[in-house]
Each structure stands twice: as C-alpha cells, then as structure tokens.
Image (cartoon, rainbow, N blue to C red; front, side, top):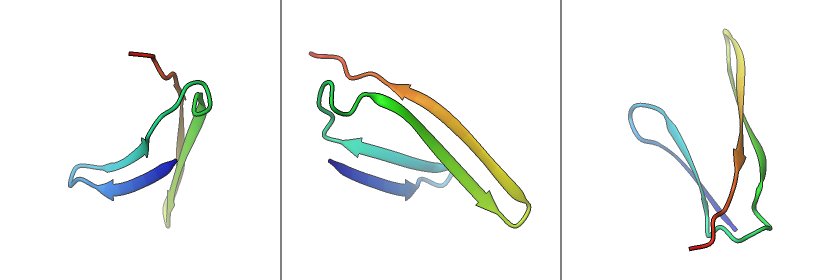
Length: 50
C-alpha cells in the first residue's frame, strides 16, 4: 500500500494505491490543524471489483 500526499494548488490530495478488496475498505479520517484551529473529515472507502 502506497500513500501519496501532495498540494494541487487548490487543496491537498491524498492518494492511496493500489487498492485491494476488502483489505483497504475502511472509514478514513483526515485531520488538519494550524495556529487558528483544527478540523477533520471522515469518509468511507469502498473498493469495487471491475
């Protein structure tokens, strides 16, 4: 599992690859903080077989 994080100019991107079923299916949380505060977001990742 490789995790790549980069800034695309309009925000940050987190890329997880390669995805495998069902090992990488989960609820992921992103937490960002700076001197004025902290925020977080969660999402569920579902890997579909093609």
